[in-house]
Image (cartoon, rainbow, N blue to C red; front, side, top):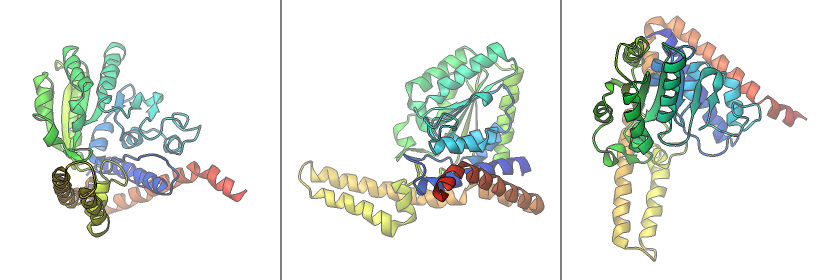
Length: 344
């Protein structure tokens, strides 16, 4: 395992765990969508970007920005709604931008693809050898603008790498239940070069993404590239996801969730048969979520990377200590005005 990859994966994970704690304390408002489980994909791709490369992100945008080198303090200040945050405290965690890094995100499903195409077009016109990378989830490929981008980027032969992170869940619906075909087949149909990787193996992602990025930079190939990376999403669609809670605490949260649905069966209005069917579907989804949670915990990419560092424990321990200090320092600085206010 490359120490740089482990460091960047650990930075992304540690940062998001700190953000999760701030959210649970009520310091960050609204929903919180984490990218825990995607660190190997993010580190394997983003560590290979250069100055002048563009980065288009979906709403799980903090890990790529952390790995890209965006300072942690303005990210945290943005999440806390402070005026010195990346977006003046107005964008929140789904709309993080850094003009200096040519990186931006959007909470609109599928919007990272046209954004990435725009960055790739600018790279082709203004910065020969530069590329753009767009991250997207597999469920977003059903959006019209995503399909339009697959077409137009191929027609214009843009230096664009689309990284599709696939966990087969579109919020709480299995993607395979609502999407015809496969992501690779869709991209191939538009003439894209495609590849798939195990998204929990950072070095495999690094090697395959590196090959595609090198080809895009050299302009030896006639168009964009599409990388499908399968990996878990450890915290569900958002923090507090009821399916994840129920899968981890079936006797508490699971019982309550099923109980509420059962109670609704006898209420006035609607057909009891339809409600009963809905209850059975919910039970099935919960069972699949529980089985998936068990599998996914064993596929934790950060845990896998750490185990791969067992032959280099001194370096691993040093990285972990340094990352811990970095995150703690950023947190202390981000909360400094709150601490000062409480002391006044």
